[in-house]
Amino acid sequence: MQAARMIGPEVAPPAMCYYEPLKGSGGKCRACLVKVTAGSEKDPRPMPKLVPACITAVQDGMIVENTVNEDVLETRKGIVEFLLLNHPLDCPVCDQAGECHLQDFSFEHGVSSTRTVEERNTFEPTDLGPNIQLHMNRCILCYRCVYTADQITDGRVHGVMHRGDHAEISTYIEKAIDNDFSGNVIDVCPVGALTDKTYRFKSRVWFSKPVDAHCECSKCSGKATIWYKGDEVIRVTGRKNMWGEVTDFICNGCRFDKKKTSDWVIEGPTNVSRHSVISANKYGANLIKPAFPVLQAARDYKQINDDRDRSFLGIQPALPKSKKK
Ligand code: SF4
Ligand code: FES
Image (cartoon, rainbow, N blue to C red; front, top):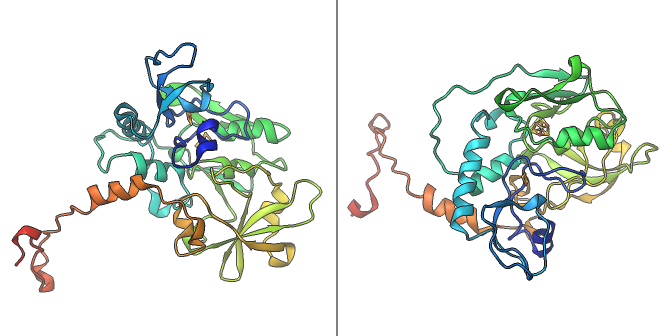
């Protein structure tokens, strides 16, 4: 994964559970499966099965197919389907919409229909202390928040309980996550499972303006992204790099309590380099436009046959192009 990222975002495999700053992350979601057609210079035999790029060591002479291999592309469709088996399609009301890695992953690699008819696992939203709410319905069990709590905070009080399709993120005996760095679990969550209670339902992310800012803080680096809606600071997050990963984790004081412009020294507009709806109509100079979703949109979404009966509007059904005069 890191080797591919060094080449560039056009060849880096998608990642739902791998998070470079978190030791041990990866190997859970299978989003990054790739085909190794030659193992190494010394042993150029292909690997028999697809392998997860995030936990496979790179070797001299290794040849990896990631963007063109039919098996890889077909398998990714299946992985998206699998991740969406129990995931609700509640993007219109989910705070993560617009910056959700699962949304991006399914847009770029999934199919536009579903085959599942089974009932989804459902859970009631759970309060994890004063600042965080868990929507277990949306969790994809990537373990990022568990590693964050283990490695960034003083004491982890939550984890994955049970096994298989009963597995769920939970605090031990409903203990609140209330240490100084607990808010970082919100930033690492790739979906909208862990949400910031001070920000929930305040805005859609594409209506807000991210700005890099810093402050004097004795607990963390004080480097953050603050999100404006008009003149109001509606949320504070860690700064994310082009892979959507926070490298300077921030403390809860900066995240939840500093919601005034006067609390911060503004550095300038955040450069959103990851392709995202956040950058729609803003700061587009360095925007990465991957070819795949554009091709998919051209192939799948231009063929809509809109022949609904609209006579009540005084409009005739649209004719297929070939029949138009
Ligand atoms: S709550 Fe979010 S970060 Fe934690 S395991 Fe679930 S999807 Fe991953
Ligand atoms: S990103 Fe590699 S298995 Fe999840």
